[in-house]
Image 1: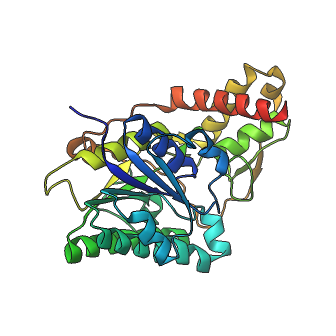
Image 2 (image 1 turned 90 degrees about the vertical axis):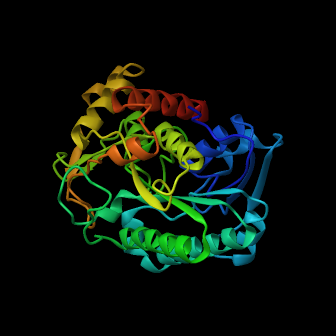
Amino acid sequence: MKSRVSGRRILVTGGAGFIGSNLVGSLLESDNQVTCLDNFSTGRPENIREFSGRSGFRFIEGDIRDYDVCRAAAAGAEIVFHQAALGSVPRSIKDPVTSTDVNVGGFVRMLQASVESGAERFIYAASSSTYGDHEGLPKIEEQIGKPLSPYGVTKYADELFAGVFAKSYGIEVIGLRYFNVYGPKQDPEGAYAAVIPKFVLQLMRGERPVINGDGTISRDFTHVDNVVHANHLAALVTGDDTLNQVYNIACGEAASINRMYEIIRNSLGEFDIGVLGIEPVYGPERSGDIRHSLASVEKAERLLGYKPVVRLSEGLPATVKWFYKRLQQKAG
């Protein structure tokens, strides 16, 4: 069974970001013609530097809030992978206006531009934040609660808009609800850095990372290779039962923040034994966070043919090794 889309004209929005750049690389490896759109608000030039000058790759620097930019980027695309967004719950609480402008306004502009350009399919990054205050575990696509942050509201609104566009304009849409994605090219610095690369960087500096809460909060940490795999599958599936749906993309296994920290510290200890004695600092829980997150991936398995290709036990040590080497290169 084919597991990678190939020979297509594709647009990846947010293609210089963490997930987007990993997806762009995979699509180029599969002989697709790939346009990458990014404004470098959270994406980084170094994430796509390796693609520069490569046959089949085109880069457009621009903002999805600019409809002319959206139209230019979508022109000729058969499939649109929409990864562009302002992530982070704390960022959305601090600045809900900009998060909404980008995550909802930009999303709708990109959807409309995709319809106008004649794109067949629009595959977009949804989020586990949509489950909000629903306490049931594991998380099942059809059972959600009320969002706990402006970010959660924006990602749920995207799902609603996607469904309306599918019914009103006939474009095929698929939403992939990502759960706590980690892996190479994730930004370790900045006010809204993700927890895994941030902890790696802090430990390498000999600093004590801060864990929000008592560390028993759990997440379904998902390696970026699983997300890339799911996007390929979403581009390939056919049939009315698979389209215009949202799917959980995760590993289907939860680990506490304490466990995640232990794996990171032990993995770094292979390079620097001194980090093994560094204990975390425990601080207050963050506003807008849920305590536990665990996905059911049954629907994605049944309809997309998705199975996680990388588990936490192998993915997290490999990611720590990648960051260690990259940060050592920068330091040297």
